[in-house]
Amino acid sequence: VGVATAFFAATIAVTQNDIKKVLAYSTVSQLGFMFVALGVGAYGVAIFHLFTHAFFKACLFLGAGSVIHALSGKQEITEMGGLARKIPVTFVTFAIATAAIAGFPPLAGFFSKDEILLFALTIKSGGSVLLFGVAAVTALLTSFYMFRLLWLTFLGTSRMDKETEHHVHESPLSMTS
Image (cartoon, rainbow, N blue to C red):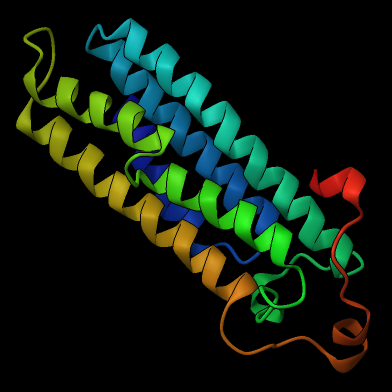
């Protein structure tokens, strides 16, 4: 159930263009990873991923809020682009949190997801090559949709209308600190 949830939610996240929907489906996918850990009896690993996920997802949702604030309420990532130069503090924090959820070492997501994948493969109480394979593919999907989100929002050329682009601004210190 956990790996099916993780995979299904990740495939939905790949298709989303609303910044908050990508993050919301990503959350469901990460909950699936936690249930994979629970399903194979790795309870501590599930709690570890719950805690790591809480921190990098909080950072991502705060970053999404900062982006939405900067764009006066716009949420479609296909109508963004080039924001890294205009809102650099938001970009840097969002990029670090993206790397964390994607599982880049030495960030938290690497350690918690790696443990889930290890237990999914090796534990005698339910681990298997199939469980590991689907979970690993899902982890790759996570990297794909998160870096797609990062790219479409912050990098590349601007796809904003001129009025929106003219008013883009970094969030105040109360939001970025």
